[in-house]
Length: 250
Image (cartoon, rainbow, N blue to C red; front, side, top):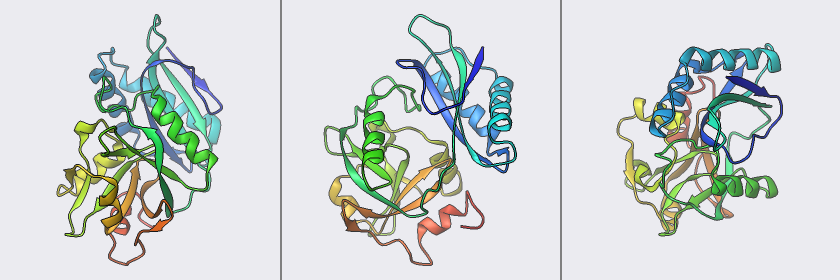
C-alpha cells in the first residue's frame, strides 16, 4: 500500500523509517540508493521489506505530479501505526533557497542516544522535532545535538563532519546513535580516511572546519557556531572538495 501527502507533515506516532531525495529538473537524484537505504533501515527495524520497485515508483510518480520538470524534495517513509500494517507514504516540500554556508547553534535538546533505532532515519524522534523547531524559530540553519554525556551525535537535519587541527577528517562515532545518512555514506565511500570520534563542544571550537552533510544539500560548511566564526572559505577546504561529490559546480 502507498499514498502521497502533498504538504509538509506526517501522520503522528508512526513506527518506521524514511529517506529524503532531492528532485532536480524533474529527476529524482540517487533514486536507487534511496530505495536501497529504505529497505536496509526496514530490515534493521525488523519490519517487512518494502518492494524496491514500489519505492522507486512512488518517488517517481510523486516527483512528476508535484514538481513536473522543476526542483523539490520528496520524502518517502515506510511506516505503520502501532496496530497497523506498514505502508509507503510520500511527502513533498519545496527545495527552497538554502544558503551554501550555514550558521549553527548547540541545541537545547539532549540527543536520546542509540536506543532501538539502529542508526536509521526513524520517523518519530522527539529530539529531532524539537531541534528542527529551534531552527525554524531562530536565525540559524542547523542545531547540533549532544548526548547526556556531552558528546556530539549529529545535527537535527544532517550528519556532522569535522577537520581537526592535525588534519584528520572525522565524524561522531555511530555508536552514539546518529543516523547513518546517505550523504555521509557517499562521503565515506569516496573518502575512506573519514574516522569516527568522540567529540565535545570544545572540539568544535578547536576544529579547522565544521561541515553539515546530507543527501539533499550535500556538504555545506558551517561558518559560525553559537556566534563564534569557523574558517570555511579557503580554496583547499575539505568542504569544497567534498561538495564536488554531490554537485559538480559548487
